[in-house]
Image (tube, rainbow, N blue to C red; front, side):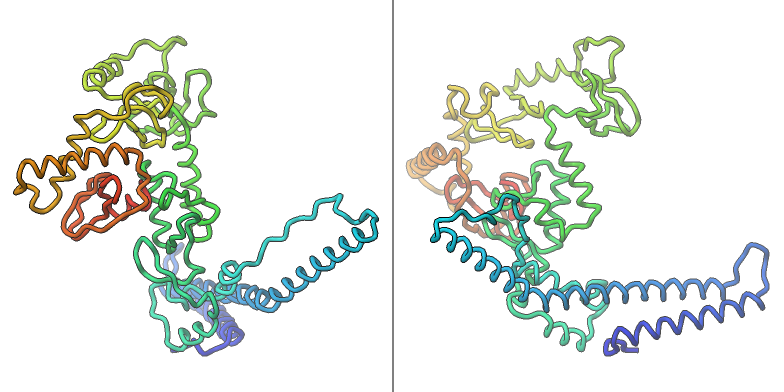
Length: 440
């Protein structure tokens, strides 16, 4: 039965009548029903299930009525509020001008600051106007949307809100009220993609904080598109990822992060299992206050020294440089010199090593089609050009990209892309779509 043409009052009346009928039917069944003690007959269970469904429908209709009332208030009052605010500002300006011309001091000049009125911009109004579209009718519950409802909904969305924008992540088009804009680069993300990006930032520290083209995506600007559970998880993870020299429960079966508030002295108490962990060596807390040397840690330090690895002073991870200059950006976001470990540009160490530059230049030249058939002198010239380019762009901001066709591997996450990949025009780094916009 198609109910899309019925008004809300009629629908609410129909639901209430069915609830009354179920109530009477339930009383009759309880008087006549026979069965085992403590068990309800199938008929009674069916009545309860149908009653729950009707109550949910009734609540949905009530919520829709409230949302529609908000929409109507916004449409009717927004222009009036703006006009009154503009008139008040003009009157205040005229009054101030009159006092200035008369040479008198304005006794009404603000000794008490006036609270700021939030601006009713087009995007905010657009979102408020869409509140009355129920999830089932809007087609987001997995059911098909009727043509009659779709036609009526199109008439409700007008002006700027009727213009769809393209999501930079999935390339699909969405209405502006269902998207979030990345300040700085101007890219838009749809509800599904911004949710995926925040979820990924919780699981992959290299994607934290969520960002696009180097610009951080603030939680407050995206919160209206994120589930409340995800918002809570992100805030909890934010505390963990922004803590330097983090401590985790030493028990392998727990490994829960211990916030700084739970660390007294050098003893960290796990809030999940109450185990006590040493904040220095990250193993079980010691009986005395001094932390003995940990053989496993000392062995790792010796191996790092032999291999030439460097330790990040922020998160204490060891980092191995594969190619490029000595400017290291750790997964935790800290930037330091690979030679001495000091914060970047706070030392006099060289910024690159010739052998590493040549290795990187050979890799870049080898990507080109026909590179293996080039004469030695021509390949050597190309390698030298790329070596010079690496020196010039060793601190590249990756602002100019081009597409390269064919199967390629991302230099950042090492995923293999079968069709095409992005290549930075300056430093020649190759990156997938996720790494280009959200990681680099």
